[in-house]
Length: 291
Image 1 (spheres, rainbow, N blue to C red):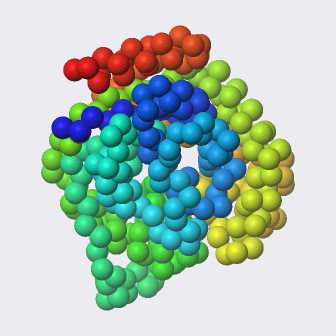
Image 2 (cartoon, rainbow, N blue to C red):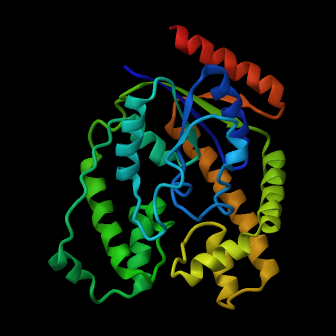
């Protein structure tokens, strides 16, 4: 089976900088395992890596879709597998757990054609009720769609129903020889890093980015964008919006950690001390390539 190094963990733990150092050493290429960085224009809010930070390491699945495009786990799965087959030493790096697992394991998704008659059965549901249904069926997809974009919500529901039926069998069968490295640190330290990162995003112009997307008709239900859209709509004040971003990001990090620990068989590496962590990660990757 093809070998794949997977570097995953909660938001703000330091995946980007560590993966760059390791990819440089092993002459690897990085495939983004993030469901938001794939979109053009969602830069600051997704903590998208800057060109100056890549240090010559080739990155894939970043800035490849327009904000109006519907990008889901089935699309991600197909594109990641294609990249894994093409790249000599692929590193899959990110924090979107379901997407990463779907790429590595035998999840089978079929994209259904639009069924107008099937959609009619939802005619009596409000946008809020319809969106709540999507949240329950496919939470990750719900993050990328505004609740009032009814057509995209209906499409995502159809795709989620199809995924639910088709992924019941063999979903824990690995398709690759994967070394899964889960990065972690004490929760208090991680939460401090999250708060600091949100402050940096604000300084870099997150509000301007959200407003620019909003003016083009893109109001994503994505962490950071959602809260500032509420501020722009006059629903909350600015300070509360920033506090909510920090709070909701901390909650996300906690959910990510729970998901990865329960769903992925990973080598857990504490990255509190970056130099020590690099040594442990390097040793694990070196042994992985030798076996």
